[in-house]
Every structure is written in structure tokens, then in C-alpha cells.
Length: 243
Length: 243
DNA sequence: GAGTGGTCTAGACCACGGT
DNA sequence: CCGTGGTCTAGACCACTCC
Image (cartoon, rainbow over all chains, first blue to last red; front, top):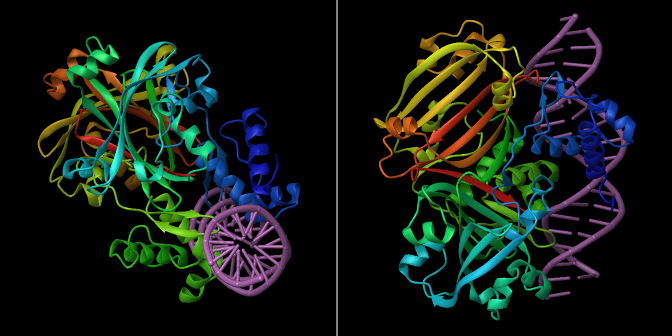
């Protein structure tokens, strides 16, 4: 499905880096050269390079060129701050091939009214009606995370427990309710409650990784606030920054 | 220090969003309008908007416009995956105003040779010589993190314990050894060793947030591998993604 | 159909690194 | 000095949303 020049070029260059046409520490051909090779403007080449850079595959040094980085290896479940629509989508990451089975167990499903305290937690407005959903996430049959979610009811009036059991994001897409436009997240390490320790079968460990995610519709409405608590030692969150 | 048109415009628009000229959920003026207002091309406006978007202040919906997002509040020490040169720079974040004092205590400082096992951990080559440094980080007088670092000796032949005590990044800048070009990081939650629990005075908690950071020079060399372990409940890592 | 952002071209000048 | 990437302009066409 080639559609954009710059993303085609991005994929070609990425393939060439992966297959060692341009090994780590070498410098890519200059932007002018690449322009000629692909018969596009320097601007289009620059967009492709920008994308490679935001992937953490290369970075540029003014006056010298674009340098290829050595790859990093990590053997845990990879997720990044906000780049998946839902838990189900973890499996689609190529690094996460070892995930064979993802299950969800709905622990709680009810509608509630947002009060003062919940408003602080969720950033919803006081008086809003919301679904409150607790879900246990199982990877290859083992409890790996608990989600505590609030979904604003206004945006999805007829959500059922069956939808929560399957995939809420799938439901939103199927029903064409709205589009998801952006997500913000805050990751922390927190000490756990007894209930969480029991459900996640933590044994000695008494902390979890907490990822609080705020998701926005394409109208600028916050419609979801979910806090996911992950068991220790099995998840990693990757990042890249160039200066 | 206005230098780039697009970043000037970025700062102006950011200020206007902060001061509620454009409140949350409203739509910014179109790119064409902004072009005229600032007397620049649409391209330049687009770069400024892109920067606002990567800050998580705003996101765009094709065919509709640029939507202003509601702000998120969080009351912990904020750091983001790789966007600070060193621990010392945490203080310069506006959100971290409550940090009054940052201290470093060097626990260990020696040179070692990278063997097979260390090569796996650091991604350095076997046989490389490296500095091994352990540092305890104190925020407002309280132990908050331990750094375990490896620096490739080749890149900085004359590092002293005094440099480690102050700021290694400052030393690199002062001596003009090389430029730092990029960093990659992996964040996880890990169970701690007894030693770590003692040094960080963890009390009941037995886990930490671990951030493993790989830093590259402008020649494409990996020169630093640092693993920082943070005490629970006091740090948060923020992210933003738009779809 | 009018207006929005998304992509792309063909030029230009500048700041920086290496020679 | 020359070559690199960084910024910017002035135009063009397309896909999408909204009315």
C-alpha cells in the first residue's frame, strides 16, 4: 500500500539499515544524493530521515551527516508510552512474538457519577456519567496487569460488559462512534494494595508499574482515563531522544 | 534569543494557549490565517504546530483543524525518557520547582575491562576499558536514586572521581571531548537487592523504577550505559502520542 | 462546494564540520 | 574552501470534514 513518497522512502531505507546495507556507525548518503536516487526533493528525503530518527535508528549531525545507530536488545514485553490503542494490540508488535494468548477478565462493570474526588483523578467534569471498569489482563494464561478504567458515557451510550470483555477499542471502531486522536500518559512505580497483590499473584514483590493514560477523541474531548498496573520485571517502556 | 522563525512562533502560540487566549477544546486559527498573521509560509507555521503537538498541547484533525488539549496535572518529580543530559538538569524543568537541593555521593569509582557478561549488559565491545561508577542521588537531602554507570574510557581518558562527584556531562562539555547526539532508554520496574533497599532506605517497598539509558556521541559511538534506580512513588515519566 | 490540513516541488540562503 | 544538514519561501494538488 504505497501512498506517500516519504513513507515509501522511509521503509526502503529502514530495510536497508536492517539488512546491513548501511551498518551501524556508518554515514548514510547525503540528502542531495538520496534526492537524486529517489527522484524527489530534499524536503521529501528529509521527512523520511526524520521518521527514521524518531524510530531511534539514526540521528543526524550537522555538517557531517546521518549516522546509523547500533540496535538495542531487550527481552521483556515491550510497550511504549501511548502507542497502542489497547491491550489487545500488544501482540501485533514484532518484538512481542512470544505472546501466544491474551485474555481479559472483567472484574467490575458499572456506571457511576463523577464526584469531586473522581474529577481530580480522571480530569472528567463533576456530574459526568461514566463507566467504571476493572479488568484483569492475562498473558499466556498468567495475570500480568490490572486496568482500572473510566469511560465517559456521553461518548458511548450503549457499552456492554461483552464489549469490555472483548475490546472496547474494537467496539468504538466498529460502531464508528468517533475517532481517537491522541493519548497522554504518565508512568510511575507505586506500592500496591493487598487486593492488587492478591489478584496479580505478586508473591514477595509489593510494587507495580503504573501507567495512567488519558485518551482524547478527535473533537478534543477526554473520553477515557485508564490506570494500568503491571507486574514487575516483565514489562519495559522504550524511548528515544536526539539532541 | 530569537533565532528561528518557527520556534519563535511556537513560543508565541504556546504562550497564548497557556494564557487561555485559546482555551482547551477550541480550534486554533487555520494555517493560512496564521501564515498571514506572522508573515511566513504555511510550512513554517506547520513546523511550529508540529512542535506544539509533540509537546502534547495540541493535536490536529484533518479537515477540521488544530484542537487545544486540556492540561494534565501531576505532583511528582517529572522526567522524560531521555530528555535530560544528567541528573543535575532535573532542576531546570519548570514543573520541578520544588527541588531545592541536588547532591551526589560517589559510592564506587574504578576502571574495568568489559567481559562477555558486561558486553551483554552495556552493549560495549569485549575488551573495551570502561569506568565503573556508582552514585547515590539525593533530592532535598533524601536518597532518591542510585546510578550504576559504565563510561567507555576511550572517549574520556582522564576522568577523575571529582568529575563524577560534580557533573560528568559538564566535564564533557568543558573539555570539548565530543558532542552528545542521542540517547535511548528502557524503563522497567524491578525488584531490588538488599543493598539497594538499604542505600535508598526503602522501608516496606521492595521495588524500584529502573531506567536504563544508552547515550551516543556524534560519531555514532555508544559511550555511556547507565542504569538509574528510582524510589517508588516519587517519580513520573510522561509521554504523548498522537494518531 | 468551501475550507481544512497533508503532501510535494523547486528553488534559496545560512551555520556548521572537515580540508 | 566545499559539503553537510537546518531553515525558509512560493507555489501546487490532494483528501478530508462540514454544511
